[in-house]
Length: 283
Image 1: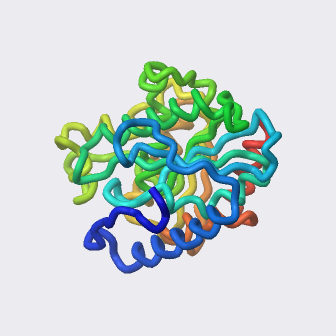
Image 2 (image 1 turned 60 degrees about the vertical axis):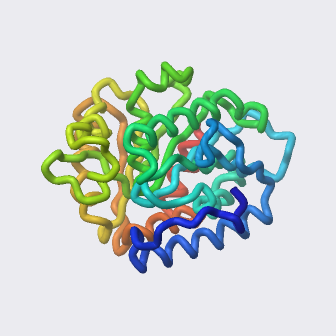
Image 3 (image 1 turned 90 degrees about the vertical axis):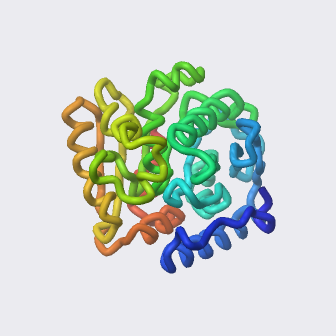
């Protein structure tokens, strides 16, 4: 996928604020890609959308670097991996590797195809990242919105990770931004209903279902002006992880809406970025 040749996506599924956000981060990411050492469009599967972009530190001699794998948002129906490259400079100078993941979207697929893609992307990174200077045992998994949901769910599905050849100890932390963590069969909003093949899949698609036995640290953030389902499921997820004995921290950003908190991921001064950088450097 070239930045100037992205497939068109329906604007009807995106409100004005989302459209403005998408245009801003795409342009910022384009500039980052043009000025950075990158390896674009690496395939982890046969589908057009099963690709990753790698943003690398300037030095080619660095080895055993921590890796941040990040999934875009877009309500499971919109978005490109090209959206998230603007975040890369805040991490590549750590030094670290930043990997932006694309995955198949609604309406062409339904859950669990997007989860399958997330697992497959993690498996690809674990298998090949050493060739780019990364440490396959130091993977950090995050995402915004729908991507945060998929990052959390994939991290907690130890059975699927093991089947794909990814040892759970390789995942050092999960970092969801404005994610959804619980779907109620009787309370699914329209996009959530569209994601599921059938309403009965709601618990299976809910990260909160799988917190038992988790030992991967979580750092969960959202804005106090965020979307309703984010506000509704954030603290229950934090509480469920704590009750399960997991290490979890969370932060609510005052005055931030669903898109501002994502844009802040490219700000080196952001408390979220500082926290993630510290976790990555400490492993």
